[in-house]
Length: 406
Image (cartoon, rainbow, N blue to C red; front, side, top):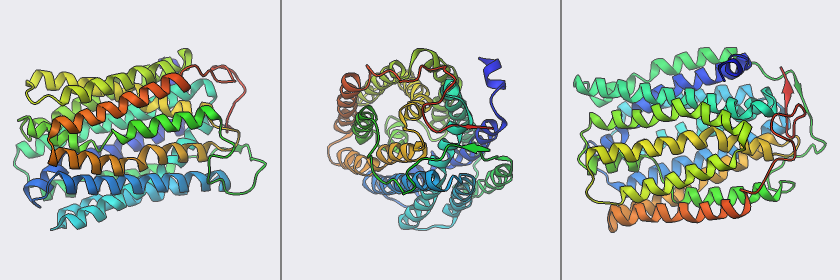
C-alpha cells in the first residue's frame, strides 16, 4: 500500500495537505461552538439545530452548483481557492459576535465556502488518478483531513487547560487560513480532460444510472437521521464529560478515522465498495442506539465513539469512490454535486427534528430516531445497491467516468 501511496500524483498530496491544515483550524473551533452557544450566548439545542441545519443545507446547494459548473467549464482550481478563502478567513470572526444570529452568518459563510470547493476538489481527485486508484486516493484525502481533526481538538484542549479565553482561541484560526491559501498555489489542473458531448448545464439526475439514484435515496434517509455532529458533543456534555475531555474524545474519533481511512478505502479498490459501506452503516446504527441510554460510563462512551470513528473511516473515502465508479462519462462533477447535495440538504430537517426531539422529549427519543433512519437506509442499500458491480472491473486501465492524464 505504501508504494501505491507514494506513486500518487503530487496534486493528490497537496490537496490532502490543504485539507489537513484547513481541518486543523476548523476542528480547533468546532468542539467549542456548542460550549460558546450554551455558556456564553445562552441558547439551547433547538437554536443549535437551526444553525447547523441551515449551514449544512447551504453547503449542499453550493456543492451541486459548483459541481455542475465544473463539468461545463473544466476549471476546478478557482472554486477550490475561493472556497477555502471564505471558510478560512470567516471563522475567526466568531470572536467578535454577541448573538447567535451572527454565529449563523459565520457558519453560513463557512459552509458556503465548503460547498464551493468540495465537488470541484472531489472531481479533480477523480480525474487525476485511474479508476484502480480511486479508493486509496479518496481514502488518503480523508485520512489527511481527519489528521487535522485530531490536531485541532488537541490544540483546543491544551488552550482550554491553560485558561485561554474562548474568543482568543477563535483568533488562532487565522494562521492556518493563511497557510492554506499559500498551499493552493501548488494545485495543478489536469492536462487532458474528456469533454462530454452535451454542452448544456446538467442540473438533474437525467442520464444517471438507476443504481446511482438508489444510492442517493439510501444516503438521503441515512442523512435524515445523521444530524450535526455538534449534538454528539452536546451529548458528551450531558453525560458528564468535562469540557477539557470533550475535544480529546473528538480527537480520538478523528485519529481512528485518519489511521483506518486509507487502508479501508484501499481495500475497497480490491474487494468492492459495497461491503465496507454496509458494515459502516451498521456501526452507525449501533452507535446511535448506544448513545440513547441515559447512564453510560466513560469507558462505554469512549467505546461508542471509537465505533463512530470506524463508521467514518469506512465511509468517507469509499462512498466518494463509489460515486466516481457510478458517474457517467463527463458528469463526474455533477455526480459529486448531486451526492453532496443529497447528503447535505437533509441535514437541515435532520438537525431541526433531532434538536426538537432532544429538547422536547429527551435524548433517548432523539438518538433512537437516528438509529431508525439509518436502519431503513441500510435496508435500501442492501436490496438495491449492494448487488451492484461496476461495468469496468476495478483495477482496469480504461476509465468508466471522467478521467485525465497528469
